[in-house]
Image (spheres, rainbow, N blue to C red):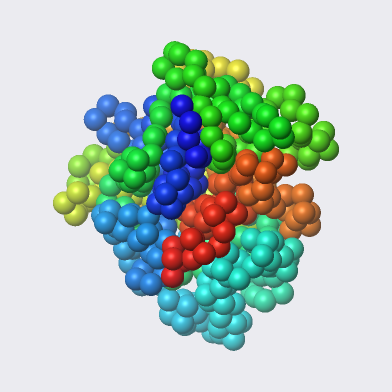
Length: 497
């Protein structure tokens, strides 16, 4: 079968690229190895219950805001979006503080200034900086000639260093960083732009779906098919083949049969490492490039506890909770301080109840390094052994006890517990080492860790969280960047306006 474009992988980046290219008249084919589409957007069933894999909330989805503009063109704004409380979309429990963060840059700064009056000017400046980043978020695509590398000054600056320079109160620094379990807090590497872009978007507005994250993937796939595109599931790409210096076809194993798909262009939503494995002994890949890609480090993953709650026991809170143990000195220690040790911090998120009232489900997430589960890497799901089950049970208990600090009586209100580790994510989403945020971007080594859509092949492009930015908004922007490399800038401008 011959297509204009073959998309490898159906994560958000792959599906968005397929939708945009199909909307621009191309005949596209998405190839997904799993039965479910969406990567971390997919949901899963346990008994009668359905849980999200990695999707919990998004920012900047209010009218006229950047994600709303993009999602409007992708046909995603008709989904049942539910706005979190504007007077407290996130709540941080750190040391003796229990603080709600408000939407709106001005309100965000004013509400925190009431608690930290001596830091008022610093908070105003910090908020103004985040607003500037948010207002210019589309500029790298609209104005820049080299994508997000056109704002290198913010990528090359340390997020932690900037906070230390701009916020003098250590406790306030922890509060401002306390909602950042949705990115990897590492003092030595995290770029300022990554930290600022993500936090800025949620301060604009914060939203959940009244339903599953899989609705996003399913809606995009439906749109692709309506425009004449093809979406294949249970289709594993076994190799990419070349001719005259270009990728020309993909060999796939589809429902037990080997098939050959040909195309003029290829877009990979797989990790760069997995993409290069498909090219095996390519004469067009210089060894130095292959070594560079294979040496890139992955960010940490998540350990997730999904709870089915007893009816009417736990109130639904229209916000997300970030809770840390009293002995944790800094939230920036979270990645290293709990590896192999007791859980130090969790993100607690609840599904919007169907008919209001009490919560029926709860997700508790905590960062987990792949090294904690690497010894079971050669085992299969549901066959990892008693030691692995005991390991997960202990971690789940620690997560629940910490979450119970914010939800009294939680432990006695649980009906069923389900857990997943980075190994689970690796098996079901294809994420290398179960990474939650893709390749680790290093502000000290930007040229090596910040990738562009272009590859050594003129007709093969990368997309997804491994390039510039992660998260729903970050991946959406990266998808537009990839498409602009293929189509030119003009066709993607309407998605940003």
